[in-house]
Amino acid sequence: MAAQQTPKKKLTVRLCGPRGFCAGVDRAIQIVVLALKKYGAPVYVRHEIVHNRYVVEGLQERGAVFIEELDEIPPEHRECPVVFSAHGVPKSVPADAVARNLFYLDATCPLVSKVHKQAMRHHRLGRHVLLIGHEGHPEVIGTMGQLPEGTVTLVENVEGALALTPPTGVELGFVSQTTLSVEDTADILKALEHRFPQMHAPAAESICYATTNRQEAVKMAAPGADLFLIVGAPNSSNSRRLVEVAERAGAKHSLLVQRASEIPWGEIGEIGVLGLSAGASAPEIIVNEIIDAFAERYDVSVELAVTAEETENFPVMRALRDVELTNADMAFVNGSA
Ligand code: 0CH
Ligand code: SF4
Image (cartoon, rainbow, N blue to C red; front, side, top):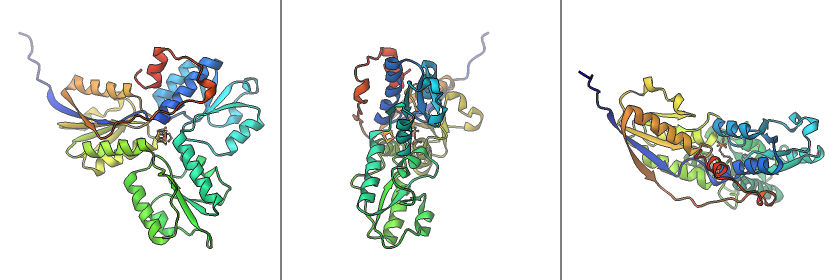
């Protein structure tokens, strides 16, 4: 007699929307793919174009070469394009590229560039800039590097805001990293405003629409979730913030995973509701891979937790607009392959 199979346990997967790629990530990946098509391999990319190994490896397979500094480009490859990552770069980087006679394509997200402009505006108006963000993150290095040394002070948390001793006799203006926790940033701002009531805000919000929307959807899906998985990399600021948001909003436990192979099956225990989202740099194909991995072990039903529709689209630079992408390229660019 055939052994009877135990029926799979029921699992509701609350799938957040929006999740995954934002317009800035889509544009940055597109720039590398288009540059490879137009100019051929190798195309150099300064820093991971976005913080995702799957994306980086996919681009490497197509002929991209990832470097951290421009001096890693060998002299015989000076003619090859070099792309700056979505996180932005200090002003010294394009200046160095010009000095080295390199051809560069800047894939900085337009919303990061907007923060750069706001920081520069504060500076132009004679203000000392307070940058809310995390030390060492490439976006923070890029934003600080828009202004002369000593004219920007980094504020990492409420303690930092309380301990801050900015230069005296000068007005203050703030900006932030685009990928921070909306709630933590509000707390930091409250502490700063309490101490420096005359401090000037930027003309536009620094935390971007994609960060805000992904956090909102996770907040909606988290209450009652036994486990919340965020697809993303350990060096992805926006993804790590989603893990924190999930736990704060009521998920019993939340974890960052890069691939289905990282799911710690032995530690999951009894679960009936799984929250699922993906950081702005995580492709949808990995979200599907994770749903499939759960479907092998549970009787899965997917429920959508949608808080916004996103229609943002950032066009690539003119130099690349004449290049045609195949369907396969398009699928890679939008994260579905
Ligand atoms: O969230 P961070 O900034 O670490 O970067 P990511 O994971 O590559 O996501 C894309 C955002 C790029 C710049 O805002
Ligand atoms: Fe741009 Fe926001 Fe995406 Fe960063 S997370 S690339 S700022 S849209």
